[in-house]
Image 1: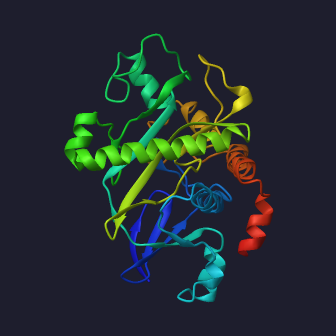
Image 2 (image 1 turned 90 degrees about the vertical axis):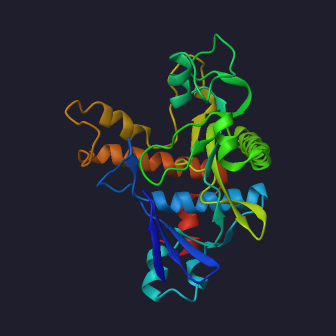
Image 3 (image 1 turned 120 degrees about the horizontal axis):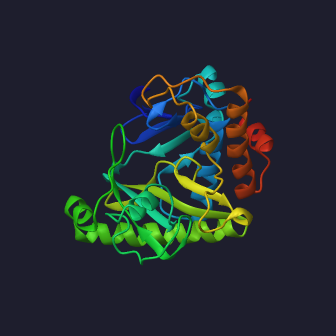
Length: 293
């Protein structure tokens, strides 16, 4: 296979003119720095959870299979290495827009709102607090950066980038998928605070691509811990962010400090927990089914 790209987490290989293999590693980044420590099981969680959502949402998407044992183009060694962490997908022409949907005011949008407003919060009412539930989900697109931060766009900027018709379709589709995911998660005691989707073209059809509704692309909160005005615990890499923030000597450039073992374990546990709560499947059973260690 031709290696065609590396992301912060994924390796992308071209199988042929129409197929790609996307392999999720256990790498993790924080503050746009890829850390030297891996998070055990993270790649399996991202792949298994994306597969679950692609199946559950029933939206047009690029996924063909996550069963590496059936991929005849892989060597026996690759089948073992990629078990449970690889997605065979249709190659698509990527639409250069991060389709972010927010149901709660948090993260960068909260900081922007608290500072007086900006592209993602210009239409919101006054008087909201951190972690407030928004009157309705908002679509806050961003540029799709190859490295570093994605940049938030105004609606006018996003329309100029992709055109009015495509913008309207992406906004409608993204909010619809968010609402489906949020309802599904709520039934399992989890709040889907915000998320981002990516879309592409295949034969003039817009389809969902990349990962979907994972802890890397979404902010999940335990519903019983939600309280407007408070900092929320998240099922993601929050233990790593918190620990790194406490390292006053680190200037948030590479290399990052080596993570303590307990921080690594806490983060891995959070990824596994949200996988099990959302899928209703024991993580060990998923790994066994995929032939992953």
